[in-house]
Image (cartoon, rainbow, N blue to C red):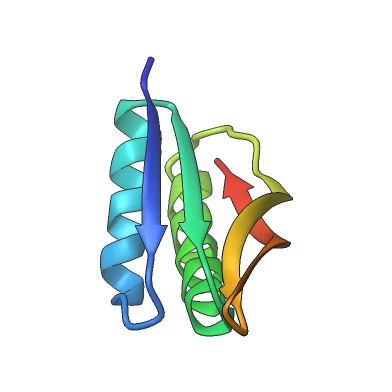
Length: 89
């Protein structure tokens, strides 16, 4: 069983992200969705909702665990740690 990481950008297509979530969840079993910034997070959440609806209809059972992870980001020319949302499916 592989752990897949899906990186979602703000301009990602929601349906394409949803299709990848379904593909990875069915074939590999463990998927982490990584998104930074508000627009990317919104896109990821919408895609997770679409994928979840499909997987439930198809009879799949799974765990969804959203959480925060600390990352280093550049803020006003200083490197700082921030907590960003993360989801494991």
